Length: 76
Image (tube, rainbow, N blue to C red):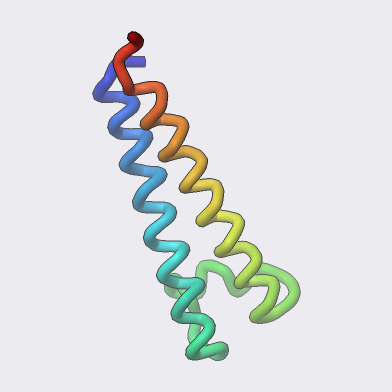
């Protein structure tokens, strides 16, 4: 993959991290709100299940962004 490809993957990971982290934080203050336009209403477990799913996606986004960042570094 080219350096631009890794930058694109890193960007996707950062966007996933920011969006899911923001939705998770907002859910602490308003348990009844539909997070991310209701995209997580199918998750079983109610509010707790949705929070776990958002946390998992946040961690996945962080891992993807970190992996792409490490791969894009020049070899020394």
